[in-house]
Image 1 (tube, rainbow, N blue to C red):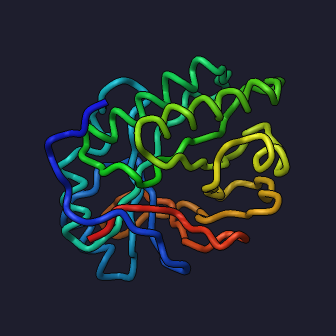
Image 2: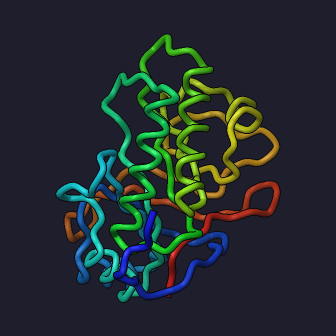
Length: 222
């Protein structure tokens, strides 16, 4: 896997605790990034495609450049499959490879977190199938040069002990849904309820924190 020739500004850094940011499935303009910075937000999380290649509405080099130059730190999460999906090991490998490849195409530097969105899994799915998917995704993203993280959402199937003991991840993001605590580690990023700002950008608000082992998420920041 080759590095993209385009280079975004900033450096890979560990997030400090108690910073407020947002994630959104909508393209963020420079003016909107500036607005959020002015009202006290510190970071933005945008989306990578499940497919091989970024799709319309997903994070692009130009958008990432605008977000960073307006003073927000940047992270990226991959879209989740359609509601009621069934994870498999092979699917984890495919999606993980695409996440890393798409991040490189955007210009995101190696060594930062990319997040796996784990939610909406079909009822009755075996825990082992979810574990196999997650660990295959982890392996593919790690081999691509990034640090895998996992967003724990509704209907993610796994218990808190399984999320900690059976998965390879060290970076956990708590959704606004009712989800289990991560045994022995906890979360590094906590999402609150959805809202809209005056620029009509639909967001979820997130707050950084150090987990119980003193670790934090890793992002790109000028």
